[in-house]
Image 1 (cartoon, rainbow, N blue to C red):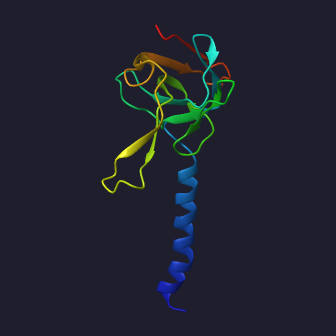
Image 2 (spheres, rainbow, N blue to C red; image 1 turned 135 degrees about the vertical axis):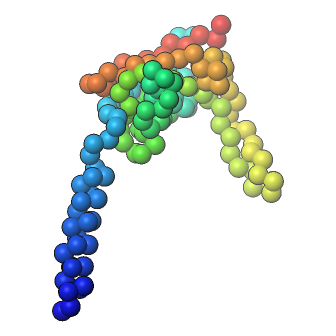
Image 3 (cartoon, one colour; image 1 turned 90 degrees about the vertical axis):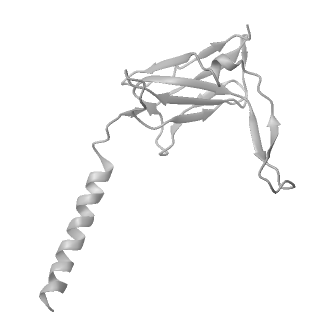
Length: 149
């Protein structure tokens, strides 16, 4: 065996181990379990998309977004865009929407068709005023009682 082959047999596995160890830890953010209930005028909201976008004091994102969809009782559980259970610890901008689009197979220009209309006021989605501070221990009380007016 030549020296280059010997080096590769040791060096390549060592590099793989180094990178694998580095990828799993030391994230610049913490993710904890987050769930809650969404109501509109006191009634549970089914099939709403709940999105948390972490923000820092300077308004910059500091971790991955997290998304969940409400069930018939308005309950949701968040999962990050990296498929981690929960949401980023700290302050998050929250958007809640029932609007759904899908691709139109009969339209080659890529226009979408509406599947479900928006029933949530814009102040909770496109112009969201909602924030939620995710505590370090997580929470099952990230509840939102929305009002149409």
